Image (cartoon, rainbow, N blue to C red; front, side, top):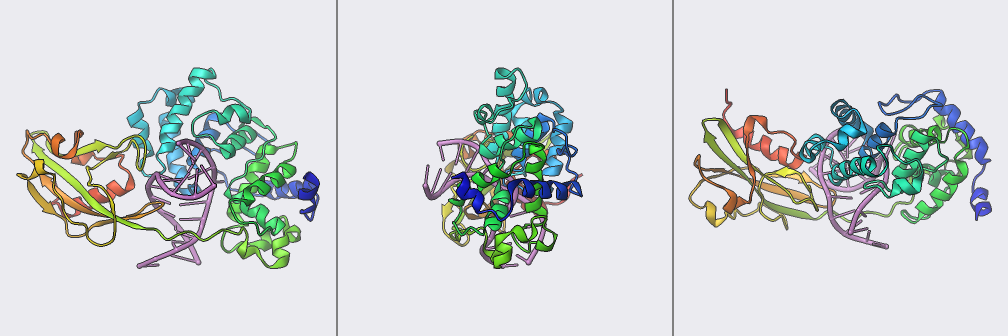
Length: 369
DNA sequence: TAGCCGTGGCA
DNA sequence: TTGCCAAGGCT
């Protein structure tokens, strides 16, 4: 099998690795979690950045990474954090199961590994939120182990290098076999980052800069003129639409203007996050119809004109927003579920779709002192 | 195994 | 405006 795979390469693995590392050394982005060339990364920072970077762009991650390290400088600090503080700090970054897993992982390392990350892939894989890619990346970048970190960048680079037409995700297996061949004994962590840097900066999904590629004419897709169709990615199904109602439940108290927030269940969409109470989000297009809970029928109800639109990974949502003004001492629990009153001026840590609801309401509200 | 799980930038 | 898709993992 090794012979078959290596014969698919048009240059020796050692030469390809050397050319890639030389290209990386000649210039690469300085990223907050990235060690100097030839050095090892701090395991805590490498792990946290890798989890944040799952399906997320570098530009989106940098401010969150910086904020987390300022607030929780060590793994032990993070492990001791309150759940709600971490969820709030993660708000806006998306894929919120990662935030729960980051906390669970930090606590597991403290409880089961004396506060230090294990160095081998098998042990890392047992930790929450660490899969095949992240385990290999941490092991190579933070501990210098010779492991192959195969992410979307590497899949794309290898698919083009081989000009392999196998559709994703089946091709991932081949990408791994080839990458294992390429990882050098020396500097495996730099190799992992160099391969991803190549995918991000040169071998881009669209408009690749083949003239700047260190692998040049060793790339079979470049020679064949098939770079644009590698990797072979099957078309995605169209996104269905859903609609529903979000309730902005507010009251005036001597302490100020407050709104009712619920916490969503840990599992599922926006799991564990603060949110406004909502109706079910049902399939279909168009303006949702307003269904008020019976227990709220005596309160002042003001629907907003424009629905909030938001696109999730697998569906698009139109949310009708309804203001419900309740008396000072009223309890919204029966109508909208258990929750907490939060001062409107102190609303933060909401997932983006809920922050869109907040902004929609605030736009129609007179400014307050 | 394939569906679920966010968000923002870009062409 | 619309679709694509980014340093994946979980179930």
